[in-house]
Length: 76
Image (tube, rainbow, N blue to C red; front, side, top):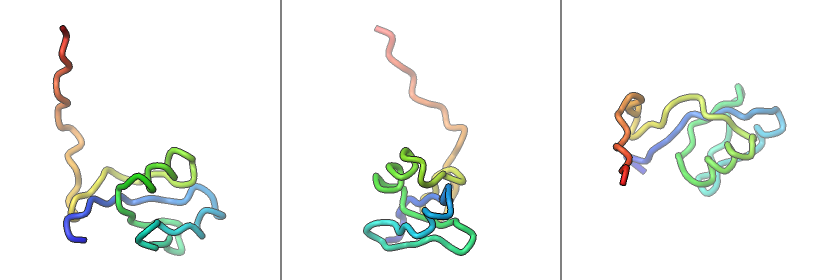
């Protein structure tokens, strides 16, 4: 899984620490944090409030560029 984009996450409540990422089966550490793939499963749990993202996305261990300019919107 080299080069897979990952993100640090944290369970928002004690009861969510029992969750594991599917399909990787990666669980949470004792402190309630984990590093999970940045995929649909992770973002759905974030949207549902079970986890929160602790940092910007990573690609192969490198921080994503936070200040990159967004593409200009077309104004037709």
